[in-house]
Amino acid sequence: MSAAKHLDTMEFEQLPLVADLPVPVGPEAPLPVAPLGATAEAASAAGKPAAAAKAAAASKAAAPKISLALPEGVPAYWAEACRQLMRRDRVLKRLIPQLSSQALLPRGRGEAFATLARSIIGQQISVKSAKTLWNKFAKLPAEMKPELVLKLKVDDMRAAGLSARKVDYLVDLALHFTENRLRMDEWAELSDDIIIAELMAIRGLSRWTAENFLIYYLARPNVLPLDDAGLIQGISLNYFSGDPVSRSDAREVAEAWKPWCTVATWYIWRSLEAQPVA
Image (cartoon, helix red, strand yellow):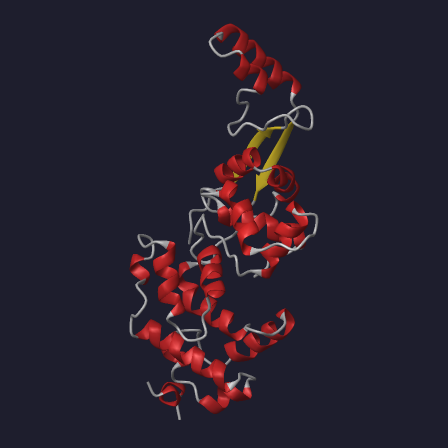
């Protein structure tokens, strides 16, 4: 019996980015959003062009620089987002320079089905177990394509270690792709909320999974995954000295991140572990 009958019914512009940003002098000095922007002293000299120019020149000469050596392949908005976040948020002002060698590298557009299938397989098990299970499952079809997954035998999928529930989830996922229930060609124009709703209509896909898909696959710039335990933990440690944090607390912190919540979330994740979470 095939898996389908059994049901009865996670490339972007390659843009090397190196943003040279001035480091403000003194612990409380503001960090300008644009390279070598006006300092507080220059701002106070409003209406006095000569004084402002002199202050800016002095700041340029005195302020050491830090280079954000971002890896190739990051989303085109990443450098500008880093600049703005460093200006607005004291924690990110510290974290981003420390972790700038790491950045989101979106997955290729041809891997949407595999990305979501891997998310389903990894649910409620350890990272190590998820990797082992995925490697076994990935060997079953000649290619990880939805039409080929639908031709797999349920017994073979179960023998690879998949639970009956995850088999059903994978079949429903494959059917959504083969029956064109997902408006993939329109994703670039659709809002985050609409895409999340479409993905959550697939059995076994939670809001957390959908939001991570928007981050890692679509590279949407303003995703805030409040159901993510790592984000909540990172906000607790970096903003509340380790005290418990509610969703409301996290949302309030993230107000300063808009419209770059994805970038801020990435660096909060990175502050907890050296390697990417997915």
